[in-house]
Structure formats: structure tokens, C-alpha cells
Image (cartoon, rainbow, N blue to C red; front, side, top):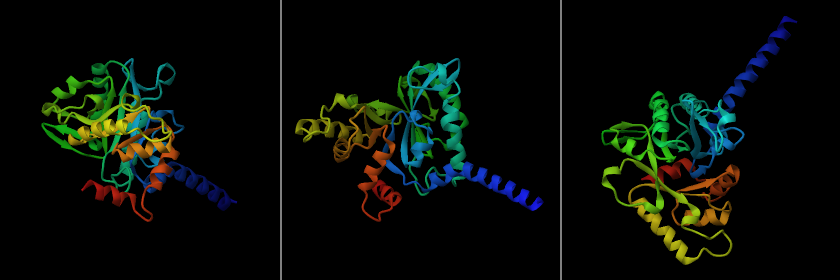
Length: 288
């Protein structure tokens, strides 16, 4: 009888351990997709984990500063006070990086981008964010007196951007998402920007039906070329959610495809990989 009770206890313990480790197992086995950007990630059933399970290497979270708390929400943070930037993103990221051999994805050497879209005042919200970033500096890309060091996670600020604060800092753990349509050379801010983004409709009206008009293609490619000249990744947000648009964006060298449809975009991107090709090897080779 005692043996049977012990066996049941061991089974329960093993089940709990597996439940705890299952995100790690999924995470380590996912194929990292450098073009995949999880728009408004916090709206998914499992914020962060749904994106990582599908191989997303770019993740977005909207942040409100309310009563000294950084609340993750899209519009009204009142009912989401327990959903904080630290509890939903930084704590689990730090834990799983530690338990995954110091990597987000096995063999993936590029940083995962965490975009923080600031919805409240730029400077005071960034001041609160900075306190959180300091606690997780061991996993964050940094700028230190002219030197950029890439680590497992790169934080990029969007929305209300504290540009002047970041530009004045000699040491920091955050970068800024530049306005793509205003991309221009600025040697004093070369290490401030990480991405160049804008709303899809500012450049394109095409919805995926028929052929992409030549004049729109030329306009998009020109903006992308300018951003790439300054080593910034390009993202168009609020783009139509269909494979025709995704295909043309990639053909025009747009780096990041924003989506709320995690599995659909993942399947589309995986279908474009050569058969038997290791996605991690492809990333490494393309980076050279």
C-alpha cells in the first residue's frame, strides 16, 4: 500500500516538473524565424510563450505607466494591473535564458528584439522602464560610451519615444524605433536607432489583390534601401494579413513582418525555407 502511495506521489511530482519545463522544451525545439514579428503579443493566450513557441524573434508589448507600475495593455490599463512589463516579459525571459544554456533559441546567436511601445509620457515612462532594464542588464544589449554590445535580448522603444534622453546617455540598455519615412543620415545618433518603422498605408495602398503597382514597389524599395544603408531593420505595421502581401514585403527586403496570426505567418515563413535546410544555419550564413 505504501509503495502504491509513493508511486502516485512520484507520478504527481513528475507531472508538475514536466508542466513547468514544457515551455523550455518547446522553446529549445522551436525554429527561430528572423522575419517574424509578434504584434501586440500580450493579446495572445500565453504572452511571450506563444510567440516563442512559434519561433518569433521579435515581440511587441504596449506599456502604460500607472502609479509607478509599468502595465501591459492596449488601451485601458485599469483592469490589467497585475500584468506588468517585468512579470510578463523580463522575469520569464531571464529564467528561460538561464535554463536554456544562456540562449533564447538553441544555436540562434542574434538578439531577440523586445519592442516596448510606450503609451504614456515618453520621459517619465522611460525612467521607470530603465529601472527594470538595470535589473536584467545581464541579458540585454547595451550602449556604453560609443560601443554597442549585443546580448540575448535587444530592447527597442516605440510609441512615445524618449529620443533626447537616450541620445544624452553614455550608458543604456535601450534603443529606438525610427520613423521609416523620416529616415536620414544622422551621425550623432547612429547608435540610438535599431529599427525603422511606419504604418503600411503611409507607403503602400495595395491590399494583396492583383499585382503590386510598380510605383509603390519602387517607393517601398527606396525607403528600405535608405534604412539598410544605416543598418536598421525595416518594419511596416498595420499591413494586410495575407500571404500575397507578406511575399511582396520580403521581396522588397522588408526585414520584419508584423502579424497577429502567429501560426499562419510561421507556416508561411517555414514554407519558404529550402527543404532540409537548418533555419539556424541559414541565419548564420546570411549574417556574414
